[in-house]
Length: 346
Ligand code: GLY
Image (tube, rainbow, N blue to C red):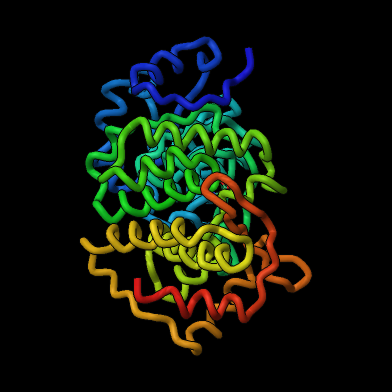
Protein backbone atom coordinates (compact mmCIF):
# COMPACT_ATOMS: atom_id res chain seq x y z
CA UNK A 1 0.00 0.00 0.00
CA UNK A 2 1.48 3.37 -0.95
CA UNK A 3 1.82 6.36 1.30
CA UNK A 4 -0.97 8.87 0.68
CA UNK A 5 -0.36 12.42 -0.41
CA UNK A 6 -3.45 13.70 1.24
CA UNK A 7 -4.83 16.93 2.69
CA UNK A 8 -7.20 16.41 5.61
CA UNK A 9 -9.70 19.22 6.23
CA UNK A 10 -12.24 17.49 8.40
CA UNK A 11 -10.72 17.60 11.88
CA UNK A 12 -8.17 15.80 14.04
CA UNK A 13 -10.38 12.71 14.44
CA UNK A 14 -9.88 12.03 10.72
CA UNK A 15 -6.14 12.39 11.13
CA UNK A 16 -6.31 9.96 14.09
CA UNK A 17 -8.06 7.48 11.81
CA UNK A 18 -5.48 8.02 9.04
CA UNK A 19 -2.56 7.22 11.38
CA UNK A 20 -4.24 3.98 12.45
CA UNK A 21 -4.05 2.64 8.89
CA UNK A 22 -1.66 -0.18 8.16
CA UNK A 23 0.77 2.00 6.21
CA UNK A 24 1.78 3.74 9.45
CA UNK A 25 2.13 0.53 11.49
CA UNK A 26 5.91 0.70 12.01
CA UNK A 27 6.13 4.46 11.96
CA UNK A 28 8.04 6.20 14.68
CA UNK A 29 6.89 9.80 14.98
CA UNK A 30 9.04 12.80 15.91
CA UNK A 31 7.11 16.04 16.33
CA UNK A 32 8.94 19.23 15.41
CA UNK A 33 7.51 22.28 17.14
CA UNK A 34 8.35 25.71 18.53
CA UNK A 35 7.62 27.41 21.85
CA UNK A 36 4.19 28.61 20.70
CA UNK A 37 2.94 25.35 19.24
CA UNK A 38 4.32 23.43 22.22
CA UNK A 39 2.11 25.54 24.45
CA UNK A 40 -0.98 26.11 22.29
CA UNK A 41 -1.29 23.14 19.90
CA UNK A 42 0.58 20.08 21.19
CA UNK A 43 -1.81 19.28 24.10
CA UNK A 44 -4.84 19.21 21.76
CA UNK A 45 -2.98 17.23 19.11
CA UNK A 46 -1.83 14.44 21.37
CA UNK A 47 -5.11 14.26 23.23
CA UNK A 48 -6.99 13.71 19.93
CA UNK A 49 -4.52 11.69 17.89
CA UNK A 50 -3.69 8.52 19.77
CA UNK A 51 -0.80 7.26 17.59
CA UNK A 52 1.12 10.46 18.45
CA UNK A 53 0.97 9.87 22.20
CA UNK A 54 4.27 7.99 22.14
CA UNK A 55 5.97 10.49 19.80
CA UNK A 56 9.32 12.11 20.55
CA UNK A 57 9.44 15.85 20.13
CA UNK A 58 12.09 18.39 19.23
CA UNK A 59 11.68 22.11 19.91
CA UNK A 60 13.24 24.47 17.36
CA UNK A 61 13.70 28.28 17.46
CA UNK A 62 10.71 30.44 16.50
CA UNK A 63 10.39 31.94 13.04
CA UNK A 64 12.94 32.12 10.22
CA UNK A 65 15.76 31.42 12.71
CA UNK A 66 14.89 27.71 12.67
CA UNK A 67 15.63 27.41 8.94
CA UNK A 68 19.40 27.09 9.34
CA UNK A 69 21.90 24.36 8.60
CA UNK A 70 22.77 24.31 12.32
CA UNK A 71 19.19 23.63 13.39
CA UNK A 72 18.76 21.04 10.62
CA UNK A 73 21.95 19.33 11.87
CA UNK A 74 20.58 19.31 15.44
CA UNK A 75 17.45 17.54 14.24
CA UNK A 76 19.48 15.00 12.17
CA UNK A 77 21.62 14.39 15.30
CA UNK A 78 18.56 13.86 17.51
CA UNK A 79 17.11 11.40 14.99
CA UNK A 80 20.38 9.44 14.77
CA UNK A 81 20.81 9.34 18.55
CA UNK A 82 17.27 8.05 19.01
CA UNK A 83 17.94 5.26 16.49
CA UNK A 84 15.46 6.59 13.94
CA UNK A 85 15.48 4.53 10.74
CA UNK A 86 13.63 4.85 7.44
CA UNK A 87 10.34 4.24 9.26
CA UNK A 88 10.79 7.53 11.09
CA UNK A 89 8.17 10.15 10.32
CA UNK A 90 8.64 13.85 11.05
CA UNK A 91 5.50 15.66 12.11
CA UNK A 92 5.78 19.41 11.59
CA UNK A 93 3.56 21.29 14.03
CA UNK A 94 3.94 24.97 13.29
CA UNK A 95 3.95 27.72 10.72
CA UNK A 96 5.66 27.75 7.34
CA UNK A 97 9.14 27.90 8.86
CA UNK A 98 8.70 24.70 10.89
CA UNK A 99 7.15 22.95 7.84
CA UNK A 100 10.01 24.12 5.58
CA UNK A 101 12.68 22.95 8.03
CA UNK A 102 11.02 19.64 8.91
CA UNK A 103 10.32 18.87 5.26
CA UNK A 104 13.96 19.57 4.43
CA UNK A 105 15.22 17.30 7.22
CA UNK A 106 12.81 14.57 6.08
CA UNK A 107 13.95 14.92 2.47
CA UNK A 108 17.58 14.34 3.43
CA UNK A 109 17.55 11.95 6.42
CA UNK A 110 18.35 8.35 5.33
CA UNK A 111 17.82 9.44 1.69
CA UNK A 112 14.32 10.64 2.44
CA UNK A 113 11.70 9.72 5.01
CA UNK A 114 8.02 10.61 5.27
CA UNK A 115 6.78 13.80 6.88
CA UNK A 116 3.41 15.17 7.91
CA UNK A 117 2.58 18.88 7.97
CA UNK A 118 0.21 20.22 10.60
CA UNK A 119 0.21 23.95 9.82
CA UNK A 120 -0.85 26.18 12.68
CA UNK A 121 -0.85 29.58 10.98
CA UNK A 122 -3.29 30.78 8.34
CA UNK A 123 -0.46 31.44 5.91
CA UNK A 124 0.88 27.91 6.28
CA UNK A 125 -2.60 26.30 6.07
CA UNK A 126 -3.38 27.96 2.78
CA UNK A 127 0.06 28.20 1.18
CA UNK A 128 3.40 27.29 2.79
CA UNK A 129 2.54 23.81 4.10
CA UNK A 130 1.05 22.70 0.78
CA UNK A 131 2.89 21.94 -2.42
CA UNK A 132 6.02 20.05 -1.44
CA UNK A 133 8.52 22.91 -1.20
CA UNK A 134 11.04 22.41 1.62
CA UNK A 135 14.01 24.62 2.41
CA UNK A 136 16.53 26.13 4.74
CA UNK A 137 18.20 29.52 4.32
CA UNK A 138 21.89 29.50 3.42
CA UNK A 139 24.55 32.06 2.40
CA UNK A 140 22.23 34.90 3.38
CA UNK A 141 19.64 33.77 0.80
CA UNK A 142 16.19 32.67 1.91
CA UNK A 143 15.12 29.16 0.80
CA UNK A 144 18.39 28.66 -1.11
CA UNK A 145 18.83 24.99 -0.18
CA UNK A 146 15.98 22.51 -0.40
CA UNK A 147 13.99 19.96 -2.34
CA UNK A 148 10.52 19.31 -3.59
CA UNK A 149 9.48 16.62 -1.10
CA UNK A 150 5.69 16.52 -0.63
CA UNK A 151 4.25 15.83 2.79
CA UNK A 152 2.60 12.40 3.02
CA UNK A 153 -0.31 14.07 4.81
CA UNK A 154 -1.19 17.71 5.50
CA UNK A 155 -3.71 18.41 8.22
CA UNK A 156 -5.59 21.70 7.93
CA UNK A 157 -7.19 22.11 11.36
CA UNK A 158 -8.62 25.62 11.62
CA UNK A 159 -9.29 25.59 15.42
CA UNK A 160 -5.50 26.03 15.79
CA UNK A 161 -6.04 29.56 14.47
CA UNK A 162 -7.93 30.58 17.62
CA UNK A 163 -4.70 31.58 19.39
CA UNK A 164 -3.12 33.30 16.38
CA UNK A 165 -2.41 37.08 16.80
CA UNK A 166 -4.52 39.40 14.56
CA UNK A 167 -1.49 40.52 12.53
CA UNK A 168 -0.73 36.88 11.67
CA UNK A 169 -4.34 36.38 10.61
CA UNK A 170 -4.00 39.37 8.30
CA UNK A 171 -0.74 38.00 6.83
CA UNK A 172 -2.55 34.78 6.00
CA UNK A 173 -5.67 36.47 4.71
CA UNK A 174 -3.64 38.53 2.26
CA UNK A 175 -2.08 35.35 0.83
CA UNK A 176 -5.58 33.84 0.59
CA UNK A 177 -6.77 36.91 -1.31
CA UNK A 178 -3.77 36.49 -3.63
CA UNK A 179 -4.62 32.86 -4.39
CA UNK A 180 -8.27 33.73 -5.01
CA UNK A 181 -7.39 36.76 -7.13
CA UNK A 182 -5.32 34.70 -9.57
CA UNK A 183 -7.63 31.67 -9.76
CA UNK A 184 -11.20 32.17 -8.53
CA UNK A 185 -13.12 35.44 -8.86
CA UNK A 186 -16.05 34.25 -6.72
CA UNK A 187 -13.81 33.34 -3.81
CA UNK A 188 -11.95 36.64 -4.20
CA UNK A 189 -15.19 38.67 -4.01
CA UNK A 190 -16.29 36.59 -1.05
CA UNK A 191 -13.01 37.08 0.83
CA UNK A 192 -12.88 40.86 0.45
CA UNK A 193 -16.52 41.09 1.56
CA UNK A 194 -15.95 39.04 4.75
CA UNK A 195 -14.45 40.18 8.03
CA UNK A 196 -12.07 37.59 9.43
CA UNK A 197 -11.79 34.18 7.82
CA UNK A 198 -14.21 31.24 7.58
CA UNK A 199 -13.27 27.56 7.63
CA UNK A 200 -14.80 27.03 4.17
CA UNK A 201 -12.71 29.89 2.74
CA UNK A 202 -9.53 28.31 4.15
CA UNK A 203 -10.53 24.99 2.62
CA UNK A 204 -11.37 26.56 -0.75
CA UNK A 205 -8.03 28.40 -0.86
CA UNK A 206 -6.02 25.30 0.09
CA UNK A 207 -7.82 23.32 -2.61
CA UNK A 208 -6.90 25.91 -5.24
CA UNK A 209 -3.27 25.73 -4.11
CA UNK A 210 -3.33 21.93 -4.37
CA UNK A 211 -4.85 22.15 -7.85
CA UNK A 212 -2.19 24.54 -9.12
CA UNK A 213 0.59 22.43 -7.59
CA UNK A 214 -0.80 19.30 -9.20
CA UNK A 215 -0.66 21.01 -12.60
CA UNK A 216 2.96 22.15 -12.10
CA UNK A 217 4.58 20.39 -9.12
CA UNK A 218 8.11 21.67 -9.88
CA UNK A 219 7.18 25.31 -10.34
CA UNK A 220 8.25 25.63 -13.96
CA UNK A 221 5.18 27.34 -15.44
CA UNK A 222 1.60 27.83 -14.28
CA UNK A 223 2.53 27.60 -10.58
CA UNK A 224 4.21 31.02 -11.04
CA UNK A 225 0.71 32.55 -10.73
CA UNK A 226 1.01 31.93 -6.98
CA UNK A 227 3.84 34.45 -6.95
CA UNK A 228 1.50 37.29 -7.91
CA UNK A 229 2.69 40.41 -6.02
CA UNK A 230 5.76 38.63 -4.70
CA UNK A 231 8.46 40.23 -6.91
CA UNK A 232 7.50 43.62 -5.48
CA UNK A 233 6.50 42.08 -2.15
CA UNK A 234 9.86 40.45 -1.36
CA UNK A 235 11.71 43.71 -2.10
CA UNK A 236 9.25 45.68 0.09
CA UNK A 237 9.55 43.06 2.87
CA UNK A 238 13.34 43.36 2.94
CA UNK A 239 13.62 47.10 2.41
CA UNK A 240 10.83 48.23 4.77
CA UNK A 241 11.22 45.33 7.22
CA UNK A 242 7.52 44.48 7.05
CA UNK A 243 5.82 41.12 7.73
CA UNK A 244 5.62 38.91 4.61
CA UNK A 245 1.86 39.08 4.09
CA UNK A 246 1.69 42.86 4.58
CA UNK A 247 4.53 43.35 2.06
CA UNK A 248 2.84 40.99 -0.41
CA UNK A 249 -0.41 42.97 0.00
CA UNK A 250 1.47 46.11 -1.06
CA UNK A 251 3.28 44.16 -3.79
CA UNK A 252 -0.07 43.04 -5.22
CA UNK A 253 -1.22 46.66 -5.30
CA UNK A 254 1.92 47.59 -7.29
CA UNK A 255 1.43 44.61 -9.65
CA UNK A 256 -2.24 45.53 -10.14
CA UNK A 257 -1.32 49.13 -10.91
CA UNK A 258 1.07 47.88 -13.63
CA UNK A 259 -1.63 45.49 -14.83
CA UNK A 260 -4.00 48.43 -15.42
CA UNK A 261 -1.27 50.22 -17.42
CA UNK A 262 0.08 47.25 -19.41
CA UNK A 263 -2.56 44.58 -19.89
CA UNK A 264 -5.91 46.25 -19.38
CA UNK A 265 -6.92 45.30 -15.84
CA UNK A 266 -10.07 47.38 -15.18
CA UNK A 267 -9.35 50.35 -12.87
CA UNK A 268 -12.34 49.44 -10.68
CA UNK A 269 -10.67 46.09 -9.78
CA UNK A 270 -7.53 47.99 -8.74
CA UNK A 271 -9.62 50.53 -6.76
CA UNK A 272 -11.64 47.86 -4.92
CA UNK A 273 -8.49 46.01 -3.93
CA UNK A 274 -6.70 49.20 -2.81
CA UNK A 275 -9.66 50.21 -0.63
CA UNK A 276 -9.83 46.72 0.88
CA UNK A 277 -6.08 46.70 1.65
CA UNK A 278 -6.30 50.13 3.29
CA UNK A 279 -9.21 49.01 5.48
CA UNK A 280 -7.23 45.94 6.60
CA UNK A 281 -4.18 47.99 7.61
CA UNK A 282 -6.19 50.50 9.69
CA UNK A 283 -6.30 48.54 13.01
CA UNK A 284 -2.50 48.14 13.01
CA UNK A 285 0.21 50.74 13.48
CA UNK A 286 2.38 49.61 10.60
CA UNK A 287 4.69 52.66 10.22
CA UNK A 288 4.29 52.74 6.47
CA UNK A 289 5.86 55.67 4.68
CA UNK A 290 5.97 56.44 0.96
CA UNK A 291 9.00 55.25 -0.98
CA UNK A 292 11.23 57.95 -2.48
CA UNK A 293 13.54 57.52 -5.48
CA UNK A 294 16.48 56.60 -3.24
CA UNK A 295 14.44 53.78 -1.61
CA UNK A 296 13.40 52.55 -5.04
CA UNK A 297 16.99 52.42 -6.35
CA UNK A 298 17.77 50.17 -3.36
CA UNK A 299 14.74 47.99 -4.04
CA UNK A 300 15.41 47.41 -7.75
CA UNK A 301 18.41 45.08 -7.16
CA UNK A 302 16.31 43.14 -4.62
CA UNK A 303 13.65 42.65 -7.27
CA UNK A 304 16.22 41.55 -9.84
CA UNK A 305 17.27 38.73 -7.49
CA UNK A 306 13.84 37.15 -7.96
CA UNK A 307 14.08 33.64 -9.39
CA UNK A 308 11.53 34.29 -12.17
CA UNK A 309 13.81 36.78 -13.95
CA UNK A 310 15.73 35.80 -17.06
CA UNK A 311 18.43 37.45 -19.20
CA UNK A 312 18.74 40.36 -16.74
CA UNK A 313 15.08 41.36 -17.35
CA UNK A 314 12.53 41.78 -14.61
CA UNK A 315 9.57 39.43 -15.04
CA UNK A 316 6.31 39.67 -13.10
CA UNK A 317 2.96 37.93 -12.93
CA UNK A 318 0.29 40.45 -13.96
CA UNK A 319 -3.50 40.29 -13.87
CA UNK A 320 -5.96 40.81 -16.73
CA UNK A 321 -8.99 40.23 -14.51
CA UNK A 322 -9.65 38.31 -11.28
CA UNK A 323 -8.94 34.69 -12.20
CA UNK A 324 -6.98 35.58 -15.37
CA UNK A 325 -3.22 36.11 -15.18
CA UNK A 326 -0.27 36.57 -17.51
CA UNK A 327 2.99 35.07 -16.28
CA UNK A 328 6.54 36.24 -17.04
CA UNK A 329 5.60 39.71 -18.27
CA UNK A 330 8.71 41.84 -18.81
CA UNK A 331 8.66 45.00 -16.71
CA UNK A 332 11.11 47.89 -17.18
CA UNK A 333 12.91 49.70 -14.35
CA UNK A 334 10.90 52.85 -15.09
CA UNK A 335 7.64 50.92 -14.79
CA UNK A 336 8.80 49.61 -11.39
CA UNK A 337 9.71 53.16 -10.29
CA UNK A 338 6.28 54.42 -11.37
CA UNK A 339 4.41 51.62 -9.57
CA UNK A 340 6.34 52.07 -6.31
CA UNK A 341 5.96 55.87 -6.37
CA UNK A 342 2.18 55.47 -6.81
CA UNK A 343 1.84 52.90 -3.99
CA UNK A 344 1.13 55.59 -1.39
CA UNK A 345 -1.04 57.11 -0.09
CA UNK A 346 -2.92 53.90 0.58
N1 GLY B 1 4.13 29.80 -2.39
C1 GLY B 1 4.18 29.61 -3.79
C2 GLY B 1 4.35 28.17 -4.18
O1 GLY B 1 4.27 27.28 -3.36
O2 GLY B 1 4.61 27.93 -5.33
